[in-house]
Every structure is written in structure tokens, then in C-alpha cells.
Length: 155
Image 1 (cartoon, helix red, strand yellow):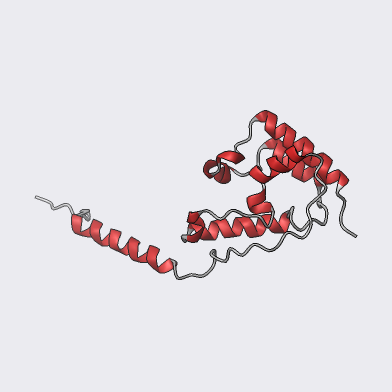
Image 2: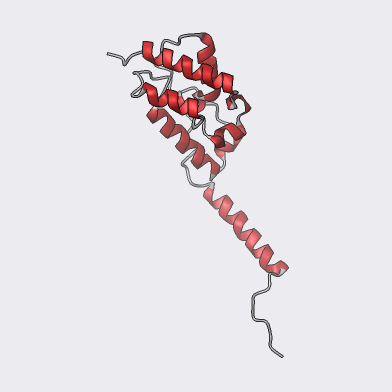
């Protein structure tokens, strides 16, 4: 008779794994990145074409593309806090409606909204206001195009 030498998942092994996971999750809370949620003051916004465009942009874009970020509770819990902080840092670097100096590529901004790559899926899943209908997406793209065209780079 041969004996099966494959490891058996026992309750003890499952418990050890669960404890190790909890210890790891607690330990990564000590990493300071992702919890510095100081929003700089708003320096200059673009000359919005309509209040409706600004409101759509606020709902769908401002959390990552402005200094008016709303930081949800999970933005304080690693490793999710790391992802949220990275998204905000990169978003502000690419386009920041609160430190307006003009958009580098108006066409790229409008195209990202039109094709649905902005706001990204992970953001839309957690933020109902960013789930734009097709009509809202068209309105935002058109409004951003008009806004960005009339708000050139600052001198």
C-alpha cells in the first residue's frame, strides 16, 4: 500500500496562514506612504464654459485631477492607500484643474473621456457619481473641449 505524500490542508495550517496574513496586514500599516492627505490650496481653475461642465468634472475627475480630493476611509488603509495615493499623485501631475496652467493636449483629455478610459473602472466601481451616462460623457467631453480651448496656458 502506498501512502499519499501530498500535504494536507489541515485546520492548523489554515490558522497559521490566516494569522500570518493578519500580521502582514498589520505590519504594512506602518509604511507611511499613502496617508499624507494634505490638499494644497486651489491656485487657479480654468475658465469653465458652463457650471454644468464644472459639476460633471467635479463628480468624475476632481478626486484625482484637482486639489479638492475627497479621501474616503479606505484611503487610510494599506495597501489600498498606496494605490489611491499613486492615482492622485499621477492624476495631479498629468492634469490638475486646481493649478491651472493649460492642458498639454486638449485632444487627449477629451478623447480619454469620450472613449471611457477616464474615469478609470476602479474609480467608477467605488464612486457612483463618476458613472456617467453616454449623454453625460458626451456633455463632459464637449464642455471640456470648450473649457480647455478657452483657458490657454498661463503666461
